[in-house]
Image (cartoon, rainbow, N blue to C red; front, side, top):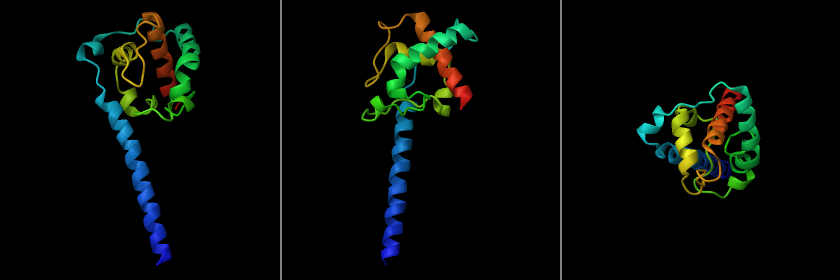
Length: 137
C-alpha cells in the first residue's frame, strides 16, 4: 500500500510540474504582436558584427531573467509570473523578427518596455543574438 501511495504522489507531482510548464508556455503564446509587426524587416539580419553587439547587450540586460542560454531560467526571473520567455522554444523561434522587435519595444508586465532604454538598432541587434541562441540549441 505504501508503494502505491508513493507512486501516486510521484505521478501527481509530475502532472503538476508538466502542467505548470505548459501553462507558462501558453501565456507566452497568448502574447501576440499585431499582424503589422510581422512585416517589419530586421536591417541587421545576417550581420555578424551586429550579432556580437546584440550578445553584449543580451548578457548585460536580458540574461538576468532569460538566462545566459536564453532558456528563460535566469535567476532574476524565478519569481516572475509569467516566467521569462524561453527563446529556444518553438513558439518563440517561429515568430518573425518583427513580432519579437514589437514585444521588446512594447513590453508586457513583468517584462519592461525597452522603447526608451534601447535604440531601434539595439533592439534589432538583440534579435540577431536571440536567433543565434536558437541556432545553437
